[in-house]
Length: 385
Image (cartoon, rainbow, N blue to C red; front, side, top):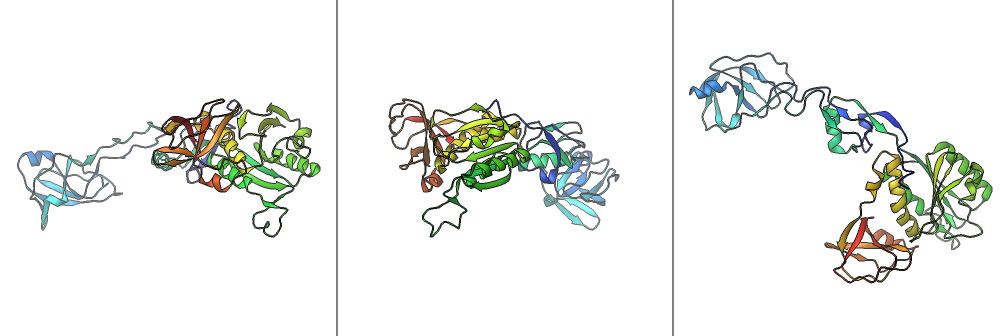
């Protein structure tokens, strides 16, 4: 899966549309910040030499506001009324905060003790033109967007988001809102969770389709998806069976399997392949099985395609058990769990079709094949779910 999770290319996007994207190139500042020596406080710009000479009454020579052009000058015995972010006049090298100054007509009288700080932000003290503010590979979170805008960039180079089609299959499925009073149907729920997970990890879901087990319709849908997507996710089929068409629908497009099954629980059926140069991932139809395997396999796949570190999507760590857990069978197993304070507890309902219990789970507890039972307080591997 990690080998297949390669970035798809880059594009330039406006900064206003870049939230959550992954930088493909470093962000390099085009300007100094601040662009000049500016005041860090509201107060009076003065000459330090005047203060050291004992002057406490200074003539106010003018005012300076943020955004105003520079070019003002003060001489000995003068001060300039100044506001936060405003450029310092030539000759000034410190700001006396307004709280210790009394204004008497055209003079500023320093009436209180001075702090040790000069309250001046010097030109380029934050960063200078040419400085690298963000490295390639950084996700453009709110803090990074501030830095990119401060660098005076109106657009950035980012990795392209993978276009994803999700196809849910099964004769028993209907759209949510249509199943009440129809005992032969169930609401199709899996694709909503899979779509949300894919977008959370950097994908763009361009189509979500629900299809009956009709081979011709499925093959046509596969062709449309391959033409419009970088990745197709097919959900459906509890296991192998006569009406499991998930792989067959891509046969005419030359499906080549990267892996055909995986020895985990839950995890039947899960497979990955390529058809017409596009990736195709098969997930189970049971909701819990689908979401668990999507978290383990789809999340790193989408992350890597979107330019993120795919392996970082599998951030395993350890936590103590709040209550015991039974022994593991011959397949690696991922139990749904829930935080209880600083420890995790397995949910009582581990059925692969459970949806209420699925909503309650916030971690997966990893159990290695043939692992013995573990008691409360013992450490287990977990991942955020």
